[in-house]
Image (cartoon, rainbow, N blue to C red; front, side, top):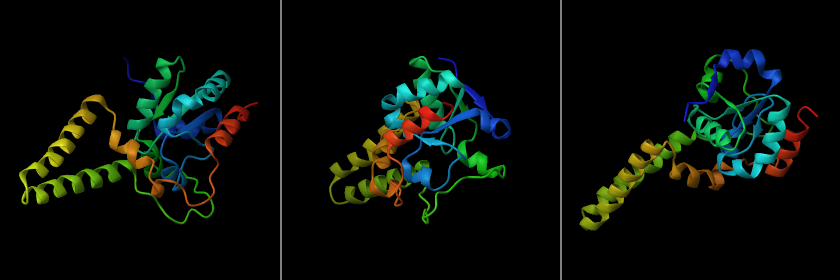
Length: 194
């Protein structure tokens, strides 16, 4: 499958008013700062949101964003397989902020969630170190480290990350402030241009 269309941060900034922006990060990441007007549809809820996304695509272009661009590329491929054309933001919200463009943070979002890639590195590293340390007590514990290594190889080969999906469901990746639930987000997405 061909790579999805991509907009760089300056192109997206210039066309932001004409784009429907869908942020596929976990709600906690989204609450820590997102593109103005972006709708939060976590990657693991993309299929549930498909009818609203199809409606939005019928009214204009869809831009899918995440922290670095990896998850948004996966989302664009998933959407393309379902008949919806969408572009990804090159460099994600990190690239957006690095170019000096505004990120919207809801009022009361005092904390900043770590980027999912950073959380995965911490969790994977901690599990490997735990497996190696416990392996000194009993060699069978080294299988924990081997399992994490195998998961990382699988993640790289498939460009997916099961650990990120699991971490995205943890409470600290949910915003502490009242955030709109997915149904409210989908209703807003349907009304975007209506």
